[in-house]
Amino acid sequence: MSRIALLCISPLRHDSRVLRHAALLAKAGHTVEILAQAPLPDTPPVKVTTLPGPGADWRVRYGMAARQAPATWLPATAAPLYWLSITRLAARRALLAFRPDLVIANDWRALPIALAAKDRLGARVIYDSHEFASEEFADSARWRLLAQRHVGEIERRGIARVDAVMTVSPGIAEALATRYRLPQTPLVVANMPPYRHTPFRPTGSVITVLYHGVVVPRRGLEALIESVAAWPESMRLVIRGPAQGGYDRQLQTLAAQSGQANRIAFEPPVAPGDVVAAAAATADIGIFLLANSTTHARFAMPNKIFEYMQAGLMIVSSDLPEIRKVIEPTDCGRLLGEDTPQAIAACFTGLHAADINSYKRAALGCAKILNFQAESGKLLTLVARVAHTV
Image (cartoon, rainbow, N blue to C red; front, side, top):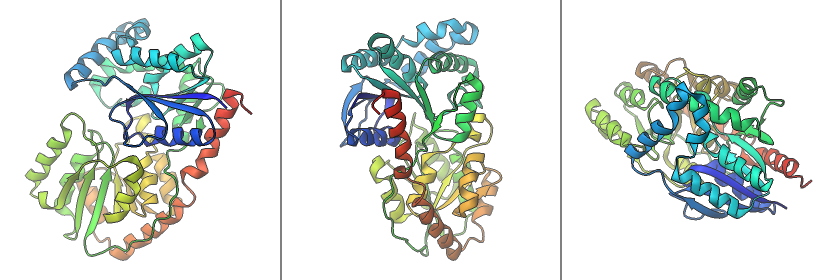
């Protein structure tokens, strides 16, 4: 068995993928530790070393600009400026002190730190790319100007030196292999919740549409709120999740201005292990919106799609290629041709309880096949191969 570090330079409480992977590897007999920022879950599955947080929003923005912008004009600055971060320096110290045999670097920010353990301790490194990082926010001109080159340089330098790469969707796997000319296409370990039996709950007289996940821009939440006025009277909206930078207050203002505040609820996040149960208890439709404007978006395969399935919800989603591959063959929901308020409202117009119930039953059937138990063997096999524990 191996000493395995899961390195996550972000808050751990809502990172269900890292928590699932840690619990799986610990159950398999490995000594596992997570290095991540607070807030933490109430009962983490393994020991956690808490890293310094990012600080106030203005410090985050200033720090990102100072570290990342120079690479736009001088790419060679990306590597040295990466380390101008208390969090990253603390993570490197903690990782080296743990003396791992294997590091799973979650996303590009963790790559140089994981490779420090490779250089100093001979640790093996698996890069787990949750996103297509080099184009994650490519629809933002500011991000393209100030950050994209830095992110791409860090990922390019790091991915060439790791022992294996995994990611969340076939599209991202192919995009990574093409961009960085990888000798092997990354392994796909989809971001699915563990299977638990969820009883079918018939749709009632009040139909609840749920968005759960991080409450941030570029999730179509403004259009979603604006669409409510044209929904059937029986439908209401719940937005549940952690907000960043006061964005939830902007959305609450928009809801008030729409005149539909009595039909729109904002709820705090629940623990990752409770997400499915909370969705199943009251919601009927789970919605996900993401503009098909970047390679990252086209190949997105978010965990909330599988969480909605597990909760037995009808799924309504932007028509993105990877999501289409799941929704169309299984008939567990509908795809939107556009993410406009009009298109969202049109999707719900004429939608009856019997229709929703049919989609909900199909979702529950999908959940029996598309779940973490089905995916977990891939991760265990990869870890065994990379760590030479077979």
